[in-house]
Amino acid sequence: QVHLVQSGAEVTTPGSSVKVSCKSSGGTFSSFPISWARQVPGQGPEWMGGIIPSLGKTTYAQKFQGRVTISADTSTATVYMEVTSLRSEDTAVYYCARPRGSMWSSFAYWGQGTLVTVSS
Amino acid sequence: DIVMTQSPDSLAVSLGERATFNCKSSQSLFDTSNNKNSLAWYQQKPGQPPKLLIYWATTRESGVPDRFSGSGSGTDFTLTISSLQAEDVAVYYCQQYSSTPPMYTFGQGTKLEIK
Image (tube, rainbow over all chains, first blue to last red; front, side):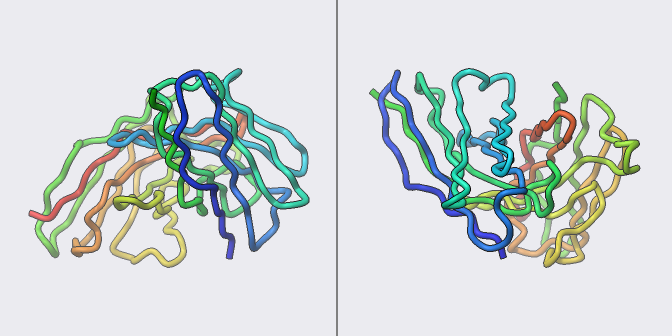
C-alpha cells in the first residue's frame, strides 16, 4: 500500500518562501507522477503541478509557472514543492497526491496535507 | 482551460434516500484514445484529504460501497448515492484529468447534509 507523508505546518511572512516535502513509501516511487494541489478553506482543490521522479520532468499549471518549483530525490523517495514570493492568498492546505498507475490520472493516494499560513 | 461546474452547491437528503450530484465541464472529457471519460469523483470530510470514489466517470474505486455510482459522458456527469448513510455527510468534488499535457481541474464542490 502506498503512503504519502508530508512535512509539518508552516507559518511564514509575506514575500518569503516555503518548501514542503512529501515522502513516499510502499510501491514503486520513481516512475509514478506525483502532483501537488492546494486547497483554500471552503474551496475546491487546485492543481499546481507535478513531477515524474525518475525523469525529473516537471509540469506546472500556468497560474503557478515561475513561482513554484517541484523537485524529487529518488534516493529518499521524497518530492518537494517550493513556493516563492508568498502572499496572504497563498494561505492554504497543500497536498501531494498520485495516481494508482503510471499515467497522469485520478489521485488514488493523498498525503495528509500541510497547512501553510502566510501572515505578517 | 477546462472549467468544472457542480450543482447544487449544497444538498440535504433524508437517510435512506437518494442523493444526486451534477458536474458539467466546459469541454468534452471523452478521450478517443481509450474511449473513456476522464472524470473522477471525490469525497472529502473535514480535516481529511479527498478520497477517490469514482474514476473514468463510472468505475468505482476498490473498497467504495456499491451505493455510490457514476454516470454520464462528454460534458455532463452525475454521482449518485442510492441510499444515504450518516457517514456519507461530506463535500463531494468532481475532477477532470488529462495526460497530454498533464492538467487537472476540480469543481467547486457540493456539500451534502442530512435532512
